[in-house]
Length: 98
Image (tube, one colour):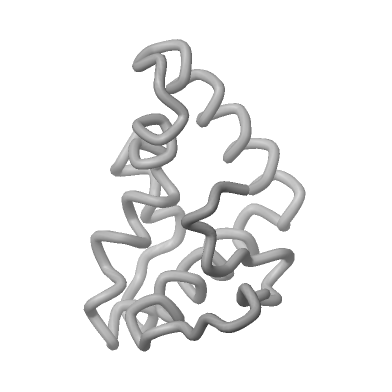
């Protein structure tokens, strides 16, 4: 993980780096990831995430750019400022970002 790492979501459990805290937007971002994980039965989320990151790495030659283009991340970042998002989120909403 990079030096900018603040938190990671592992199987729905959010682990926050020591001495850091999460804003309401960041908590919602991670909750969106949890919803994505659940609909993909957790294991398939991680397999898809890594595969998509690798494919995007081949396309843009930058780990950071590849991260920002992952469909899961795009959905989470686009909606982390919308507190009601999870109440009306459609299943597999991240697919519109592919």
